[in-house]
Image 1 (cartoon, rainbow, N blue to C red):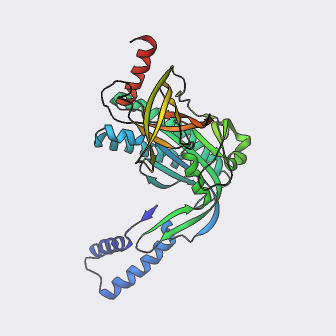
Image 2 (image 1 turned 90 degrees about the vertical axis):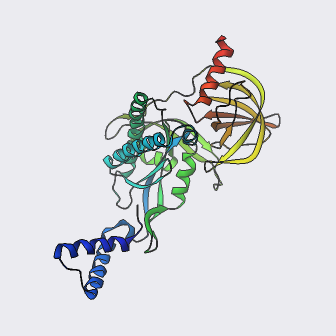
Length: 360
């Protein structure tokens, strides 16, 4: 939520007034006009809000496997997909009276409780999260008719104290929220799988009577001494029952394999050059189990090229997210879930599994 060029806006308004009056403003009148309008903007624009401490609920949604998608699709297709995604997410957020804080690449962050707090902020945020996942199903139906790939979104919700207000300068200011609550929801979002909604302990406690949850996960995240407890939201019961659509990603045939592979960690969607050598132990449609000397963290993202190992043509990298790590005989058995589905690389994996199982 930002306004980047206030002077340009003031000049445009002055020009419109001058055109309506038929004469340009004298210099003294122009200065007075801009001064009065500038003061009015301070009262009406979010960018001019004082910084205060408030309790708010933060919702963060992010497309899974977006990096891989941009590598293989035409730029125009990626832009069209993103525009449909942001348009639909924006409509859902607005319907639940949330405030879009920002769009960041393929992510959207929404606020409930800032700049105005309401008693039902948390429940509206949770209903919004469920409807966002329902909207993704509609987007994918539309994409199927266009011959475009599916989009899957992971969502995290956290409630707590934040500092909210206008940050920046008069040249460039932005209304936003900062604080540990925001940092934590960003860490949580990294653990959300396709179609999931993860709640923090505070969000779960505040809505316990009105929601149904499934798996509970305790994870160690960067910057936190204690594990972060996350609950998978299944449905909300108030003000009406809304159910999170089930995205079946874990049920698939799996085969035993035994081949070496090299991974590269990803940080902020950038592939790090330092290789990690490991050994694949099993492989399925949606993920694989590997053994590493190095301990990766749950939620870490990696990239690898499986084509040479599967005796296939080079079709690009495949991307995955760490979902579980277990220490075994001094090494680390690491379960990964693919984040880029419906790509040539993913299709190659499925074909390899099918051929191994059924000889086709």
